[in-house]
Length: 316
Image 1 (tube, helix red, strand yellow):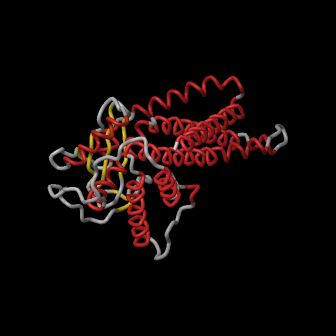
Image 2 (spheres, helix red, strand yellow):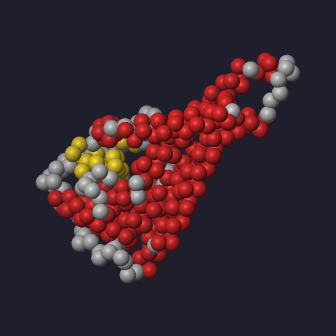
Image 3 (cartoon, one colour):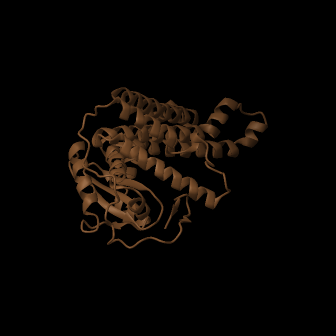
């Protein structure tokens, strides 16, 4: 497990470094070397703005509501134990998104985190599998992945902005270039055009690496890698079934792996089962029976999902 974490950390540093280098080159091509200190401070400013976006705003975007302990007492017990094992300074709050989609996500920081789970996730996974999913989200918090992705997002946005500014300048000066009064570097033009795409691909790669690391952290926290692997298998089956309903029968994965924010589920399960075989685990397995939890007090979500605008995915 330690070897995998070291590899993931090295890949993250390498990818963030590559994105930063691409941003620096784009800035130098556009405005010269003297602009680099300004780019640094622009990145810091963008990062602060990204981190400061209210988690409550994101939760409201998905119509998430606080999950009362009386509605999910077993789930709260699991989260409290996971937060203790992860040595988080505060126990994450639980929110419910009323949709049959099976998903979970985390907002906030280690000091003020919220974990949102969907009705579909609670209804279809056993308590053992839910523990694995929640441990994955707590793993993101322990690894500061939200902040890491905020850095990648800030660098990517600045790269895209500088690229757009550069392309506008090229179009404005195109008559001068075509008249032969000024030279032009086609290498620089191509770099300006493709810099946002390259940066986005690296950002997606960072996301996939952090997902692998959160899986490893979940295995360590629960002492039960197979629990998360079982949850991932169920969620993958549901996703494939949904895609067949939305698109064409037999169309299992319409997105190439390089364009996905998450690694292939098969690879995630394979790595988790490798850890399961390695044993014994550093943590005592959590007391999470492999049975359905009691969520009878929750109203069931029946409506099918619909696609939100602006790429927000299939949610209510």
